[in-house]
Image 1 (cartoon, rainbow, N blue to C red):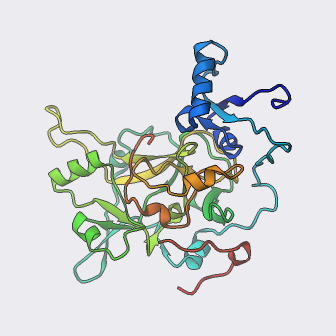
Image 2 (spheres, rainbow, N blue to C red):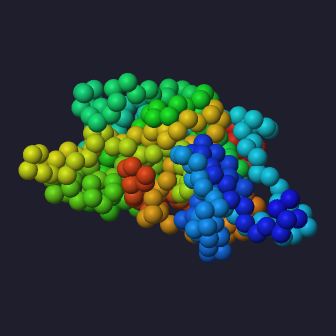
Image 3 (cartoon, one colour):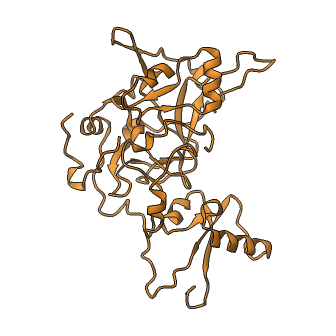
Amino acid sequence: LGRRLGLQTLVVSATDESRAFWVRQGLHAKTFCGAAEKSAMSSLEQRGLVTSFQNTTLMAAPIPQGLEPPPLALDQRDRDRLPGLKARAAASTHCYEDINDKGSFWVAADGSRQWRAPYPADEMLTGVDPNVKWVPYKELEAFFAGPTRGWGLRCTRDIKDTEFVVEIVGRCLSFEEYEQLEDKTYAVGFPENISEAKRAAGDRLQYIDPKTEGGLWRFINDSEEAPNLRLVYIPRFEKPSAKNPDGVLPKRAFLQALHDIPAGVELTWDYGPAYPRPWKEAEASEAGGQALRVDEGGRRAAAKWASAEPGRSVSSPTPADVGAAERC
């Protein structure tokens, strides 16, 4: 219809829950649009011809002028759904040890693992609503999300806004230990402001590496434009001040829902601006293509969490390989 009317740009007002759908259709928020779409949106806004609804984001895309319209990129979670892998099966298939029930650890000089002591509930929940809900770990499952995104993570039940989904667990590393790693692609660290505060305070915890010991969170893919999870630190980071000279340094990190998420929807979070996304240009030309994943482990190349509050290259297996364990 738009082509018949001679229209050139499609603009929608997207809710947080629907942004990922519109991204799959090729629409983008103004920040991510091409020059022509940015110009069109600015012109419409200046002329008062387009207004977004409350708590929505304006998104746009050029209207194709070819003879055939592009195919609609529907959500396939309820169609031809491949079986997912629960924690134990995922760890066996992908050759790592799941330590979600134990938490993170340090490696001692003799090679033994020293598990971090449990934190008191009041300390762990500093700055967090005590009534916040947690997603049961047994409800999470890794799944093959297709040749473009590779492996991802989903939940078998609905997730409510602000629910805590999973903890970031793995081997704790100091900066020196991180530098000695032969393979740094899985290790993730703190934002620069927190990292600097930790160094100044003599806090050794700078990175967490889930390569050989970790949890299902290692399957969560990147979504720069439409993430449904955010990274939060516990306790909440506070800079040193006259009132609190030592400040507050985070000891744990979790992924929390940004909005309601229906069962079966792929879980994603924004790896931040420091994360390289070389596939974006190639995917931008594909129908429904957008940077919602990288091959498993490749997303760790930047080794940085860029924002607490947004903000190994391997071949992806085929669907037939999903249930088959690899030789570890």
